[in-house]
Length: 152
Image (spheres, rainbow, N blue to C red):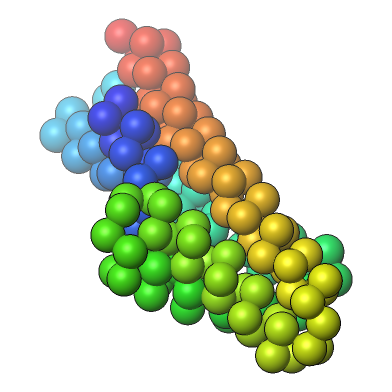
């Protein structure tokens, strides 16, 4: 589980899902005696929030900063292209996302200042979403440890 939490900082690696999956396997093997159903429900909510943070944080964050939905689409598309086109882990994804948001916003409004702001917002939200993903993984691990500790 700790390794899964650490893997949450790697792009395209579902850290919260890995940590949650280990917990579910443990619960099934143990017959849900040590990991209770309410603890598993909390772990599931944390897993969903952490696993989807890159998507919903980009959407809500960019919209709150005044950029468009097109910036979100550009950042997601650019992130995918950057991940495979620039074979440097994490860096390729980040560069692709920023360039994608910047390019799409530049096409939309034609103003370099607004496009640069969209690129900056994309980078900032990307970093925050990784923090949320890692935090969710750590919280899942914490709920697991607490449930197992309290039911021993």
